[in-house]
Image (cartoon, rainbow, N blue to C red; front, side, top):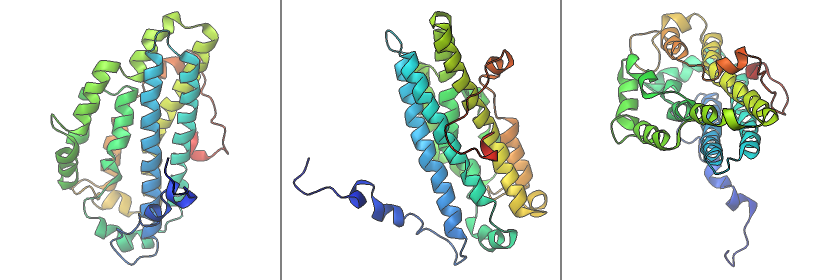
Length: 266
């Protein structure tokens, strides 16, 4: 505590937030919105990562805190659904407006979101299932130089998961000894998270196709290789995994986050 009264604007770092779109590359009006939506994605991804780590910690306690971990997983699903709503804003971007600043993005691409990959690693993706090396080009070379390698963030997260287990591994360990009602509630939230992860890249591709129109299939992706935008995003979609499809197949229906429903969260 300090003697200086705490204000709302200092507490939430309002001045910093207002300056976050200062890195725009053009004078195009819509570029600020484009930056803000992607920052919105990353803000929520950071919170989802924080929650997933806490959920795993609670599941590893003796005795495991299954009920509180499941409640936090529900919150995590609401957060992910909120992040996904950003695509609804992106869909209002016209092709002409996007093309006015797209060239200035150079090798910048949503496929470089390391936080989305960290989420998947915490949920169940393995080192062998990482696909970034399949997208050749400057953008992915930059990504792997920044986050790959033995001391990079991805390796750090994989070492962390080696010690704590991922969400799938912790579920498998808990399932045989968890009360049926608690297990069913947990499985519903796991299926919801699984569906949202599966849908994320689909929404990404659908939004790009809607905004770019014919350029979606014809022009190179901003990741900076010779593949088209469609090809780059299809690689990501093809390598997206289902981590809890078996639970859904045997009847664990997904729960609905307590928020206004959006097409992008289904």
